[in-house]
Image (cartoon, rainbow over all chains, first blue to last red; front, side, top):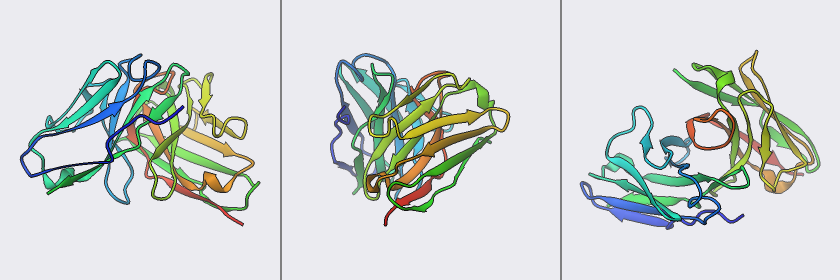
Length: 110
Length: 121
């Protein structure tokens, strides 16, 4: 099963909003509301941000929000801040009872 | 405070075996599914395996099926990954992660810091 499709990179200026897309199929993203988002700074372990499409985990800023339409999920970062510069990965439960990740998106704060 | 601490990584020759451990604390370990995820150098995240909270259900990525075995000891709050017939392409940092679900790999809430496995002759 191929990875979910994410843009390789997204950039924005401080204070702006950016959106990262995560495209899958009717066997994963489209089949369940089980999309998650993870942030990873260079050389660090990933950090879970959002689960079940739009539920923020404890301690995660409300500037991060998730949504889904059909086979595509999205992560929006509002009020972009320098510390948001990192790699972001989406993941989804699949009909094969496995989990699949996106290829990752590098967010650059200009 | 939730903590997941992996150990057991190292250098192993192709065809060799290694067992990883993940010690959990700060939550009711037996309640939640646990997964292993790996990241090859300079690459993205790849899900490897999941085990249900009770330990009765397991699933694997096709890339490791038949070679890796996930297990857990709820009395010791510890997750394991037995890796056999290792290949050079298994070289990666291996992370354990706790799930929000009791049974399946649905979405993680905590990640460990990772342990490096290098398969090389």
